[in-house]
Amino acid sequence: MNREFQQYRFARIEAQNIARARLEAQFRHGITNPEQLEKAIEQQLTMEPTCTPWRTSEVEQAGSREGMRMAALEFYWANRRDLAVLSCEGTSAGFPTRTSRSRFD
Image 1 (cartoon, one colour):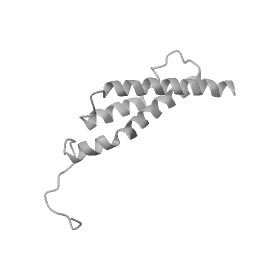
Image 2 (cartoon, helix red, strand yellow):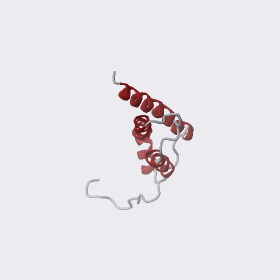
Image 3 (cartoon, helix red, strand yellow):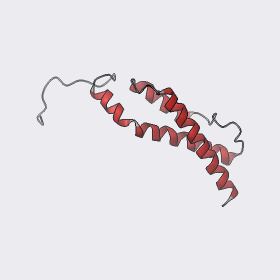
Image 4 (tube, helix red, strand yellow):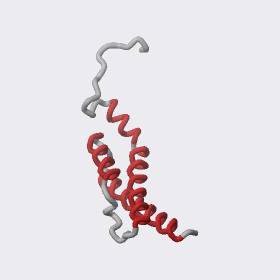
């Protein structure tokens, strides 16, 4: 296996595991606020790879960034049903509730 690819792969897997564990710890008791989840996901998608400071080469840093992003997106997709339930219950600001019947009801 190509050495650079191997460095990238190991850094990506490591950062992905660390970022996933951070998100799971942050929402250990469940997602109760969609805005809080969005903020956590946004932070994971935009931050530099601080979870793996020992990864110093450009290839490893790229792998770490990719791993953090993948963990954030996987966490979002794994919990999207909970977000839909919260939105339907009206706990999320910005979602209007319907008072009149639509033509499809």
